[in-house]
Amino acid sequence: MLRYLDNLEIFDRSTGLNPFLLLDGHGSRFELEFLEYINNGETKWHVNIGLPYGTSYWQVGDSTEQNGCFKMALTRLKQKLVTQKNDHNLPYEINKTDVVKLVKDAWAVSFARVNTNKKAVMQRGWGPKALNYNVLLHEEIAPSNPDRNPPASVIRKTNVAADELNLSAGLAGSLIDRIVIEKNKETRGTTAAEMRQKRHETAKRSLENHEKRCSAGLIAAAGKFSLNEDVLAYVRQTKEQEQEKIHQQQLRKKDIYDTLQAKVSAIREKNLPPEKWSVADLNTMLQWYKNNSDTAMPTKKVDKLARYYQICMRGEPTPPILPLLPLPPLPTLQQPTLTTADEGDSQTSDLRLLADELTTHSEHRRVDDQSGSGDSDLLLLAEAMMAHSEHRRVDDQSGLGDSLSLCDEQISGDDAVLSADLTLNEDENISVVDNNELMEV
Image 1 (cartoon, rainbow, N blue to C red):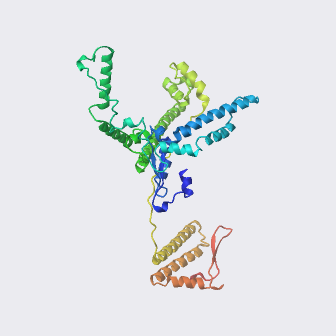
Image 2: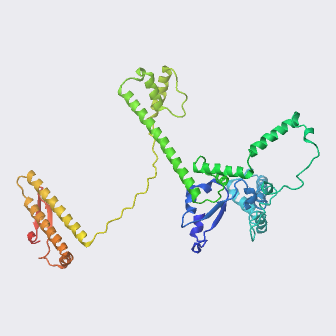
Image 3: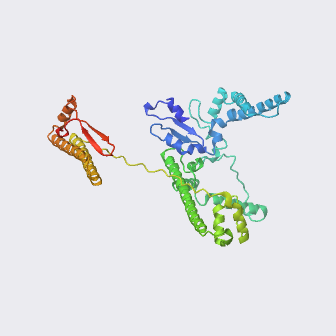
């Protein structure tokens, strides 16, 4: 959805301001792909999650004007639809094709009403023109404010002395003991602010040590509500640890498979019938053909042998496949820039290497073929190329290489063209046909 909005260029990022998005604590908000997208410099989004255990107070879609009306309207429309089907002798059921119209009609009297939506937005503190404190002042949320003084009606005074009260015997004594124990558990000698700080520190350690999966409740307990680079780093490292854990599990399975396969091969090399196998050999073969759906392995040798004949036709088990871990990026190599002199030296060295190969090839053929026919031509071609490379090297050092190459390109005419056609004769000897005198090169 965010990528679609960015492709439409709904928000002007040229101003340096990135769009803001408020989401609930659904698990999809912590997917690695989503976090990487919203924290990318080119597609940056400021995404926050609302309090995960208070969405019914701040989320507009959960209001009575929207979600409540939608559910009630949907129930009425379902009842109306099945009643009409029953009156027309149709199956008393709701099909998939009926859902579209049911949702459309229910949406029109709930989420599509502008006036009631404005009322829901205002009651939850989002406007319509400015933010307000309606959520914090809610009658169910206000008592949780530690700085808020309790109303006067809640504080009650009594003139009964403490020694006149029953604080130890009977039901009253049990209740007093229970109240004291629970109160000590809550406070433990610390204030509410210190308890809240301890919860934040515990949640932060869980995130840093990757003891738990990153979720809305965990990061809210750590005092974090922004899905920024820190949350991305937590999720990314957790994902890498999960992949490494799966890889290690597959490695162990592969080791077990290889060890078991070696034992099975050793048993088969004995060329003994199964009746002459030892109990250890039978256990190995049963383990080789075992499936997860099989019952427990028999204890007696006779039963083991019978089990082997039942499962030996299953075929060889499939070896476990190791998952590929992502490779680290390779360092970028800087290509050296060649100067004109370097290019000339490179071309000269290529010519010399080619001439050396031709000379070596000619020597090998002279040894193999005592007649030596055709080898003199190869030697002449090699010597010509060596001479040409020497001329190129001298010319490049004197700065005349470019002018000579330019003159070579401008020379035309049948008499000035040097060509060597390599043909293979019937005796499989290589011969060189010179159209002009090769030594003139």
